[in-house]
Amino acid sequence: MMPFRPATLWLLLSMLCTPATVPAVPAAPAAPTATPPSARYLEQARSRGLGPEGRLIVVSVADQRLALLAPAAPARLFPVSTSKWGVGAWQDSNRTPLGWHRVTDWIGAQAQPGQAFVSREPTGEILPPARWRSVLAADYVLTRILWLDGLEEGLNRGDGIDSRSRYIYLHGTNQEHLLGQPASHGCIRLANRDVIELFDLTLGRQTYCWITEAPLAVE
Image (cartoon, rainbow, N blue to C red; front, side, top):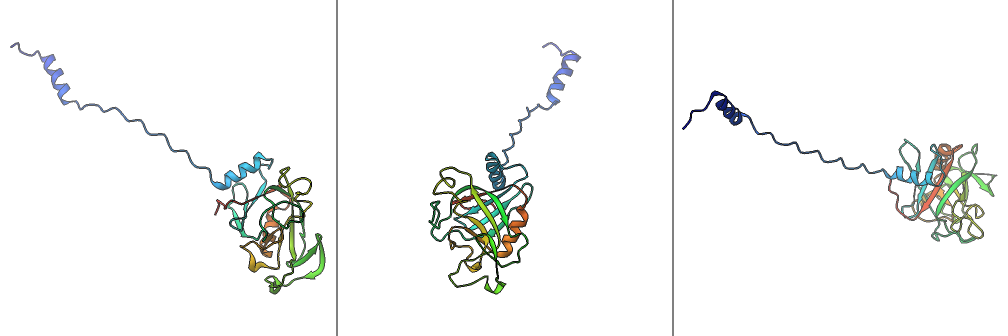
């Protein structure tokens, strides 16, 4: 056997003493972040013409709730009543229309809470809070009115099915005890304090309203 030369011996020893290098495992790509439901609703509204600073009202017939959505702000949620006869758009059906709308008129900015309106004009009657939960059949339009105009031809806009011509509003009611269940004659009822808040948060801003049979996805 030939003796190892010093250089060869040094090479063998270095190979034995040097730990093996394990190739690095590439990191798995980060999972995409899900878009929050409120952002998805606003994206849908913007695709239909809502401006970047606009407000969106989403009314869920299934939940009997309303969500007010605004950019970079938490959702505001309110109980509502849609029609006790269900959804539909036909003139004189007393049903709540589905689909996309815009708010065209804000009525009653200076009215007292409980102010009664007939044909969008204030009457001499102001109902005190004790009468905001009336068991009588009378259906009052109280406090504030947000008047809706349909945006979808053939669904809520056009002859015989036009939401604006049907006088579909969001408004305060004298039957607050029925909120959370279908009870209206076609409009969307809110508690009187809630409709003031909704009015103030949307007044002077482009505001769309989407009425859907689906449950709300926001909390």
